[in-house]
Length: 236
Image (cartoon, rainbow, N blue to C red; front, top):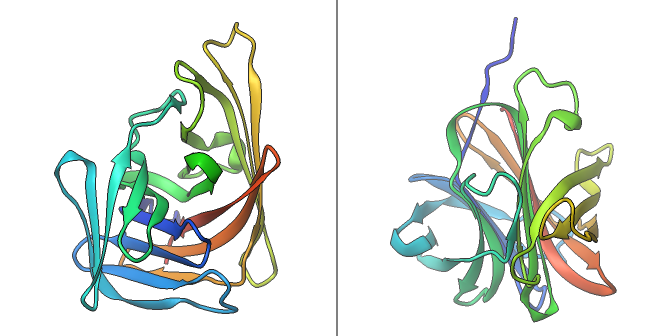
């Protein structure tokens, strides 16, 4: 019997710039929302809430009277699939920081999806979406969308790749991103690489048609350390 295709829900993930706190919301209204500390040794607190995308690229997360506002930021460089509903966001409020917003694909014919962002000093940020089509046997079939902030204007992203390694407990251990930046494939291209190690903090958001598992991770790129959040979306 074939497995049903996975609808991909809207997702907003973020981390405070000081690396102390993080959060993730998935679904609509109702949504599931997790808020926690990145140094936690276990699951984050998950509760029902709301995730809404308003006008002018504004997002809002609400849970138990708490509110997190985020605004989409224009990217400096994108890949071949820029119109996938993927955006870098600036987060205001108590968890002031950076993050990623994804509008979702309710009609997607997917097997799984991976979403991540990594933020570095001077607001250099990378956001990536990898959707694995239904019946695909490996990550070589993944459909990738990438947005970068803090890169020279006029650059484009070429040949993005995402690798992830999990432990026996199903949690992220290591994640890596590699891509090339340049004006065209014929121009001089320069690499951008990000490596990360998953923390023990984790959030599992159980939706009707999907399971969203998120973890903050410590990121490294170009001699800088930063903070990121990795999101894995699978079937229930």
